[in-house]
Length: 233
Length: 219
Image (cartoon, rainbow over all chains, first blue to last red; front, top):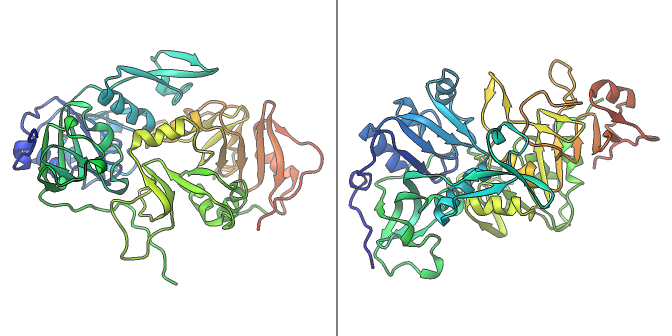
């Protein structure tokens, strides 16, 4: 067993420097690497390019990095929940690359799977296709999209073991599973970290080969963006 | 008299057939789930990674790790599954999802749709909409026929940045049900109390009227 366990978040994020490109898992605030984001704020690394489906909310998630102007460029599919983001984007302080969600996921997966580029119909005929090669496949137009190249991927899982194997819970799997292994170095933070052998190999979602560093997050707030409930009859 | 959002959702629910996997967008489309007949088997897909979505949880039973694409807390039904975002859009791109219902700011007579950006005003992003409209075979748009200023949103050509080209098949509004055919918007049904003349006035794109147009049956 190759042991990937790191004692704390500070050591886990060693090597992340100004100007780097970082992938961060999560959908909205669901499954975001909360502890790593807090550490990025503390470390005060700047000029980051962040690849993440969303940009958090004003006071949580990637919104915390935006508040401190640590992000130079954001690559996302939907950024609607963040007023500070909108302000920085409209004023030109923040560079933004909006990418269709499925394309964003596949650009991560392609990097994870060693595929340099792929064709997708998403965005054909729209401004997303501008400057991109297009080609007809099976009677339908597609555009060529390239795999992402990132320095670090930071993902969050429910359970992990010292070998770096990961298990996700519910819809918190989202981009975390696509980003694990999609960068030069992948850091996984988990709610529960167990010795190798304790997780059933049949139940592993992401094998440890895709993860270089794993640590147990100190605490999880798991903020809910839209708490919706129904009445009991 | 025009119908309301709930009635638009009710009318669209009739398009959901037994055995369908359905993706519902945010807004009116989300309401459709409430009106699908309970004697048919349907599974709802949410692109953030769940199939077999159920109703909202009871208070106190919300789980931050189980949400829909609108970031709302949800539950799952027997037979449900979770998966990652790449697999989720894989099933969308590979047309495993039978029906996509989404909202729009504008639809054109050639089936183009715009629903993600108002330059200089609103830039929230396209989310999964571009992937959905580029791949889905069966797309129904739930939208208002006219904007607040009374201007038509069913146009000859979209004026806003496009989400997808030539992809919309059917539109259900507060006034009418329309099918997109090569010549334009073919009027299929009128909302109760709405005249063909009302719909003509509210439609900028080419409106095709053939014979008597029946009233929508809701309920």
